[in-house]
Each structure stands twice: as C-alpha cells, then as structure tokens.
Amino acid sequence: MADGRDRGARYGPRMADPAAHLQVLTTLDDRDVALTLAREMADARLIACAQVTGPIASVYRWQGAIEQATGAS
Image 1 (cartoon, rainbow, N blue to C red):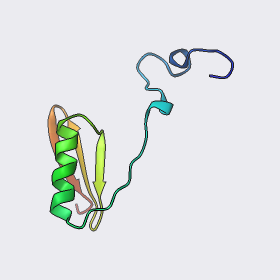
Image 2: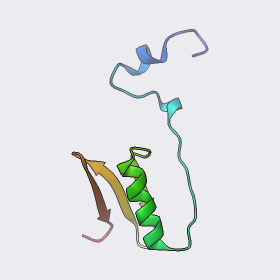
Image 3: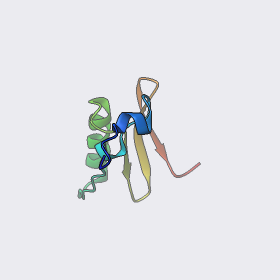
Image 4: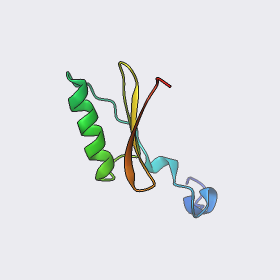
C-alpha cells in the first residue's frame, strides 16, 4: 500500500487481497466446450467460479466436488 501498511493487516488473515484476483472473459463457439473447460479449470483449482451464458450456468467447487447450477429453478 502507498502508506507502507501491510495488505494482510488491512484485509485480515482470512480475507484475500483483492489486488491478487482478476476477471477473465473469453468467447467460445460451443457451449459444451465452454462447460467442459469451466469444469476442468475448477477441478484444477485455477478458478473459483465460471459463468457460461445462453442460458447462464455457473460452474464452481463446493465441498470438494465440482458443481454446476443453472438460472432455471
């Protein structure tokens, strides 16, 4: 930080530094490929969550398993 304080002190030991995160947007021409990529990246712990649109689907790790949820209830 500009004033010299440790970021860990500001955000606490369990809260991640927001500067260490980023959002990536990409376009694929096949929904199934996009969902497969999302599941593989979540399984490899490269992402926290992926959202595939048209209709929206979220892919994420929850309690040790890769989950997929859609906007339809």
